[in-house]
Length: 340
Image (cartoon, rainbow, N blue to C red):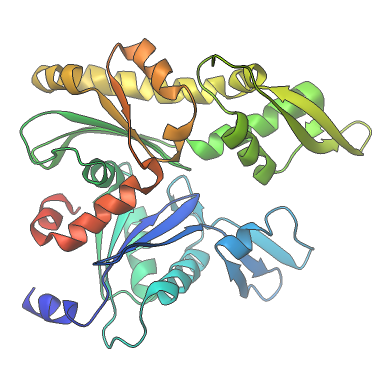
């Protein structure tokens, strides 16, 4: 620990939110320094990494046969060890001042339902990518710290973190997770539901980038005051030629309703399993929404209707996990309490 504090003077310690959709990095004393898609482009034959992050995402669905653009993370955990390591290495080198003599200490947020094998994979990939020591903390705990919930107090705090690969719901009290549930249904499944719906109803094939774009621009979980529509471009599966159609927000709600209901059920289950004393606190304080999924219009209204509780959307839901992880970098005592 003494060595760590001495080394800390010479290295830029990092907090990483290693997400399925995006990776964010926080540097001690500087704040969030990187926010890039978790995508890697590789050469099909030599398997050499050609691009990472924004550059690689531009290639998704648009590559020639010799290049493959892929996501090395799936459902919040590592799907491809080699490419995840290459991605972490690239991001660390991009933000880390190579003039420093010492490799950084790295804290990584991981899903609460992660297995021992998956934990080891995250740890090993960060060490191989140049980290000095690696600490892991649970994403819902990091999100709760990031949105400013009083996690150290003996009261119940409930957080719902909807990311790209996982939805995490947790009840936190006295710096510990009293109950947590991780369902591997989140933003990516919403994209897949949109692709499937258009294919089934209109024989229109779209790519994952288009699906994500539709979700951001038109997605809603609850009927909105003003009806919206969007032009969607794809390939007609019958005629085989490009086609454009007009999609309404009502149709899109129908397309994603199953995925949204899984998320709502996870919240209801968490409320059923919460000890009565803490449940009373949650009735007063409500549920805080974080993660990219919190930006889906009307999700707070739907949850309010289904649970009868106050729902608060975090000020910056996309950064909640990395901000919380970053705070543990700066407060060693907090890290000791929450690391897994």
